[in-house]
Length: 320
Image (cartoon, rainbow, N blue to C red; front, top):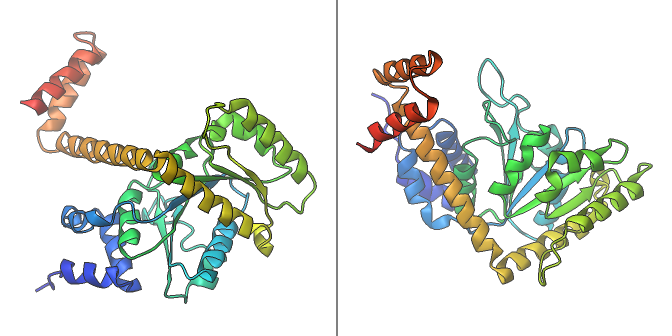
């Protein structure tokens, strides 16, 4: 007989910081375990404990290197750190394609650092759909901060701002990133901007362009956060202390301005909506329901009704 999972004991060990238990809980989250609801109920009191920092930017700007440097800096102050590195998915296995990032292997033996690669599994927006629940597991394990590094897929990466308290936008000189950031709408989501590889030619110009573009979009309201633009060389750890200070300053601003609570509530709304929509999709993907949807699709395609009326019929059947 298969051994019954003792979820309470697993949660207790994870709260004590046991790495294997933390890993098993995140696996339950990723796999959409039948006991996921029970797990999230057990961890509900952990929500909001950690400072969730998202890192986003184009491929090649050094997100993994910067994440590793941040882990090193936070560990130097005695903090327990969680890292969720969201990778592209294998089209065959659905698993993370890159696996645990090579550049973060220096932390692999540190029991106070939890690093997990998660597969995006086709989920648009640069994040995995299980990210909110995985963050909650790391919060329960006492990680503060939790760093969420995204896939690096360009315009759709703006979703990371909805999952983080503080969003770092990484750019690099010589890649046209300043213009690309403006085009992709990334300027609107950044709380801290970092020009990595600042030892290269063009770093000062990239920083100046960023500051100018940010100033054009500033609201001018008293007490509004003004995103700093920092230059770092993450591979050598240069400028990382200033970055940590900026992150701590933004965390303080979130607390004093009330924006931290507002962002957490928005995250909760998005999570609830996502779970509800997934449940509806699962319901209409079940036996018999597909026939209803196919019949409505045929009616719309052949002009017997319109898509809004068809959608109303589905909603009405759910409400009934």
